Length: 264
Image (cartoon, rainbow, N blue to C red; front, side):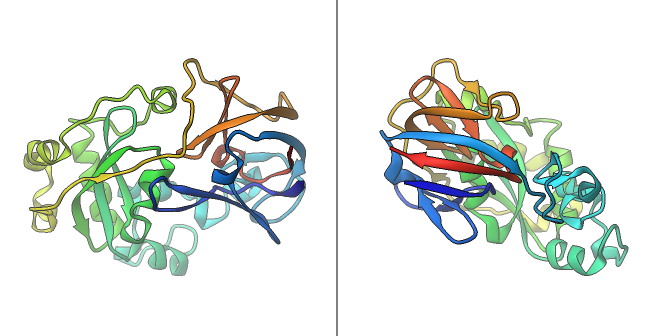
């Protein structure tokens, strides 16, 4: 069976284990059902997620001109402390920015490769943790807008990482941590204007991934250099497909690529 479509990040369902879906325009694939099957991935062309043109993807699924124009790729996406919608100030599209920034946000701790701090919209819990491949996570602050979440993250990342080591995450070379203790340890560094939003009492969420075999030395598949690949699927974690030969494919970092996927 063969499918063709433009890659976007896999949709997920919080279950035990996590359910993964590769969604195309007129079809979808439940990736959990493909474990132990031989799969081929073939690059066909580009399709920018904004303009739809066959132009090389620059970042986040957008061609270069769209990346520097659309509000979905503005700096405040990656650096929430730059959010200005709460002040009524436009960056690229104030209506969109108000919609996205002026809603409840969570500052969290997640253990993907080690303990890290992060920010997400409340509506994206636990999706954000799944996308990062975290096996445990906990909310520490719930604030009414993205700016307050951003300045909290900036303060806390002086004392805890804000990055995930993707190789460590995929190898599952991770130690369990007591995230409640981490939350209490970091409380003193939360900005004064955010302290009223601190979550005093909650427990961590544990996540289980559909992986039969973790890679010892993961090697990343780059469709730009290797436009056709075939392998046996052994697992899915974060936004990565894990294959028997230790090849891993980051679906999210290949958004905007049209591919053929054949299942044998």
